Length: 290
Image 1 (cartoon, rainbow, N blue to C red):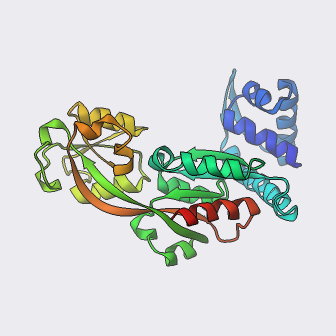
Image 2 (cartoon, rainbow, N blue to C red; image 1 turned 180 degrees about the horizontal axis):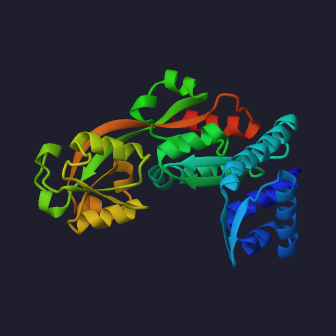
Image 3 (cartoon, helix red, strand yellow; image 1 turned 135 degrees about the horizontal axis):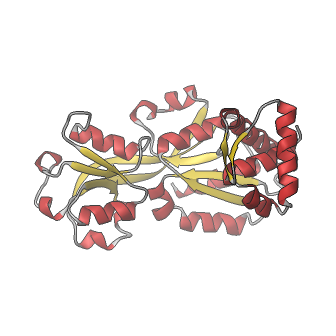
């Protein structure tokens, strides 16, 4: 089981297509297929379930992909550390959608100018998922809003993580036209919430504010972007909770009413033992900005 086999497996697991993975890797599809078959033979399990041209990770494959990514990440980290950062390396950064949209473009551009040899890979998701991906080694660091249970340094330490508060966000409740005169959450009559999937800290805060639970009479419409949330609010279907910095990026700020909910910190979190030169430059850039 060599590193190149793990890279090939990781690419196929990501694409769920031999053809797309081969194109991404610059290899012939037949070569990718052969390497996957050799890896499966070596491990003694099937890593993919194949049905015609369609494929999916098997149960064993789902278990193995995390280990493969961690091994590849550790190899990249080791190479980067022992060369003193000369190789640039790859930095895998996770972020909430809101932070990626409103906070990251300028500092990421600055980091790229200062460290052009470091490849940044940015992915987005809810805070809960991002924290787990940092813990498991799938991400090197992430910008998250800490859930209530993890909102102090002691809980981060228990999870093997470190964190630094970077930005303070003002969370607003965006109101549909029918609730435009409401001045507190208790006055809101709409009983539907537009939100990201479970794991989003902002969604959890909204659920606490409104007492949303099974049997409460509330409906949750799960959406994949703030643009979609703003649209459903404007259409009168839902309320939504979002940072003021995101609302300022839309025209809705001039047409829809809001109620201030709370102030919450956005943290940069990383594994306690993760100390590559690229990450230390990256973290310093944001700490200085904070």
